[in-house]
Image (tube, rainbow, N blue to C red):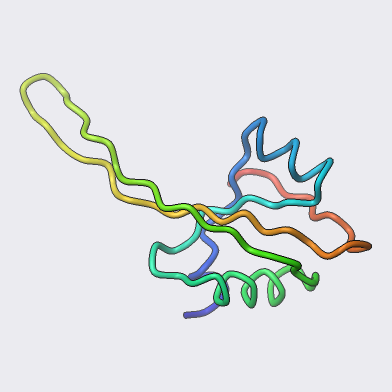
Length: 95
């Protein structure tokens, strides 16, 4: 997979912004089959920063209803990427 297929976009929430500003931890929505090594290499290739560690979390899609019809949101994966000490933090906006 290319780096742009691994990282689908940033997650911009209060918790993610606190981690980015204070702890140099970035939060991304990633491809569900991406491994920690894939995420590390993709962040390095896209942003040219050194990565200290990667933590991932898988989320199951919720069941949603609209009247009598029932559907399901897709499963997704989140990655927390901690930058090495001394690295400049990344500025991004939600797409």
